[in-house]
Each structure stands twice: as structure tokens, then as C-alpha cells.
Length: 303
Image (cartoon, rainbow, N blue to C red; front, side):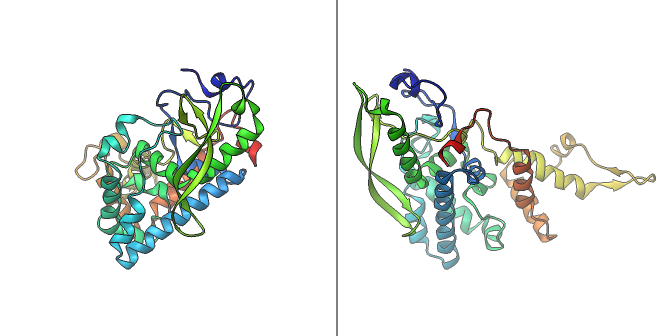
């Protein structure tokens, strides 16, 4: 099947991700990329408010010991396909369903990574893939899509108004009831949205630059930069000439306790925090410094 612009006959550059309407496209919504776009787009600002209020509410449930309330928040990520993003075999169906994924996150927040949550090292949705097994680009994308569904629907509505082809001959809009995160009510709500129907299924448009093949803040990137970088400093010695000598990262990877994985990420992050060193904050600064808007990124057009 064709891409969105070909399917609807829309010419030229468009401010949305032009994906194939009939297959899973190997792109993933990245909450940190959206956060960086928040400087120029009202839709990104709205999406960031959704992820921030959601994570804040989950955090409050953890602090109060409200497991039932926490799970009710975390087990609402039903499978969806409106954006055409991700990999079907790796989404919630492939991982045992939203209930299982929500339970993984709750257990991690109340056990393994609770200390980091308590001291404020973990503050945003994009921090979770760094430390929780099974929460990678696919699940992060699905979670993010559900949390920011309403801003995505608002963006889609603007695109439908901008491009009359969405209402052209042979095409129609449908009314759909969807569960979305309501930032004002701090709760999940069922709301009705009018969305294009492509290949007889609802279509949710995604601003260009919001989705990537990999997460900006992936567990692997965190490990290879911040975690191993900190381990290098731990073991560094000063030579007789005053030069700082560091163990190569490749060699560190073979040492006990420093193998690739989220257990290492967690242990080194804890160790660093005990010495008043916030590796997650430093990693975000590194990511933000390296980030540049993708070529042709037109998110600013909808500011």
C-alpha cells in the first residue's frame, strides 16, 4: 500500500510523518524527541504536559503506596494501530498485554528503581527504558502514543483542515471513541475524535520529527556513554606526567559487574548518586547537546 501522501494525493512536503498506511513502519514515537520539539510546537507543548502529568501522578501513587491506583494508571495502554508505527510482534500483544507491561513498570518503580525515583533522579517517561527490562523503543512508543493521543488527534484535525484531500472523493472521516490521558483531570477519559479512515482503519497523524528508528534515550546509549564513562573515571589513575589514564570501554565491558545491560545501568547509576553524581541528568544534557532537528523537520510549521 502507498504512503499517506500518495494514498490521499497530497503533493509536496508535509509536516507529518509520511508512513505506509497498511504496514507497521519501523519508526517509534520518542518522548524525549517530542520534549525537545516543545520549544517550537504547541502540539509538542501539549504532549509534554500529558507525559509530565502522567508520570507525576504515577509517582504520587508509588509514594503513597496506592498499588491499585498505580496499576489502574499503568494498565490502560491497550494495543492500537492508528499511527502505523512500531512492530506488531513487539507491541503489547507480543509482550503479554497491557496488564503485564503495567505490572512490570509498577514493580520496578516500587522495588529496583524506587530509590532513584525517591531522590528525583527519575522524573520523566523517557527515563524508564534506561532501567526496566522489556521497556524498549516499541513499548515506549506504544505507551507514549496512548498518553499523548489527544494532542496527536488535535494535530490530525489541523492537518485535515489544512489538506482538503483527506475529505476528497473516495475518502471519509469516522468518529471514534478512544481512551486518552486528561492532564486537567489527571485521569484516563473516554473521548470522541473524528479521524481519517485509511484502508478502512482510523489514521492518527504524527508530526515529523517525533518518531525515530531508535530512542534518543535508549538503554544501550546510556550504557555506552554515561555508565561506562563513569566507570572509566572510577578506575582512572594519574600518570607520573599528570595525564589521566582511563581503561578502554571495550575492556571495561568484560569486567564483572560492568557487562552490557540494565542491571549495570542501575548499579552504576546508584553508585554515582551516592557520590552526588546524577548520571541521568548528565546523559540528558549529552543527548540534548548532540540532538539536531532532522533534515526537513517541519514541526515549526504548526507552532
